Image (cartoon, rainbow, N blue to C red; front, side):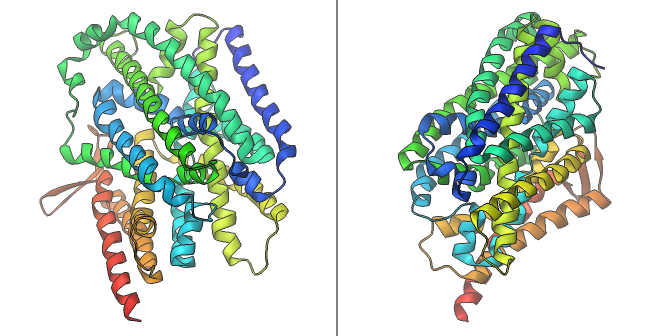
Length: 484
């Protein structure tokens, strides 16, 4: 069911879209070399880096995905699902940043290729490509188009993807980071304005407690411990997050990276809390009849806004939600396209590719990424399960070879990197495939499960199997490779 927006609100949204396209058009002339297109000339300052990190990583998937989870599960979303990311971000800023600045690489896959060889680079590029497809944001755009404008899910996903491809294909990384700066401001202000309106409508946190009970305020939640731990451990993906590596490689210096991440941690925590609080308010409204009880969880926040925000502010919020999605979609389309062209096609090409060719091919790969992203976005039913899948693939494939390459002072053994990366990737795909084929739906946790030898296996448990497989592959490859 479409929720009507006032013409003033629609005008605000249209103005935002027009400004975004204009930025890409103006900056197209700055793109001269591939490093300009992909890394913005390695000239990002701390304020711009803060804005692009926060807006890219906390997009519409966090805005409506986290709020939807909070409407069902409560504060566990902030405490147990979100705060491990704080620790991982601090570790990335304080341990990895200074080690990366001395490396001449354009991406994480490029870095691993220099360290372990082409086989590991290919596995890293495949995993990074799957992860970098902004499936979560596209799912959010599809839901937003359906709720706000009455569009079919597929059309909302296609329109959002097309807009992102247009302005980033023109201006590259400069268009990406500068629009992210604007998007960061819009989405932060709009969420800050919406929060008190929505909390007031439900009677504040006491009203939420009265509707949902004390269980909604349990920091560890009520789901099985392994299930909760599996989602908490997805935070490890930060250590091999391709967008973070691209941003760190694009930064002006190590101090810029460290300062941006430290400020980003504070902003991420605040943004997390706002989305959690709004989601819990939505859950309370569903429980008390203020919202239909069958409202899809991923649409709770979007359905609250036109009901409780004044005209004009509703348009600002919709623009902010669109900004949150665009900030994620544009950044990850650029990274995914870079994986295809620079990390997969370029090493296999039998000729040297000049900057103009690389830029042209990357623009084409962005279109390919958009098509695949829309297909995956329409396949998954919930943002949360799509996130678990992509984060598990990335972590299982890249965590072990990346940390051993960047942190451990050991001689690189190509076989170790190849077995670690391909072994982890294969383990994830096999685990998911087995449970999808022989498992059954778990309606309470909204996932799939399978009973095996008295154990209950959920799809989210793939990480517990695949990362050890990757580590064993690295150890075996290191021993065998050194003997050759």
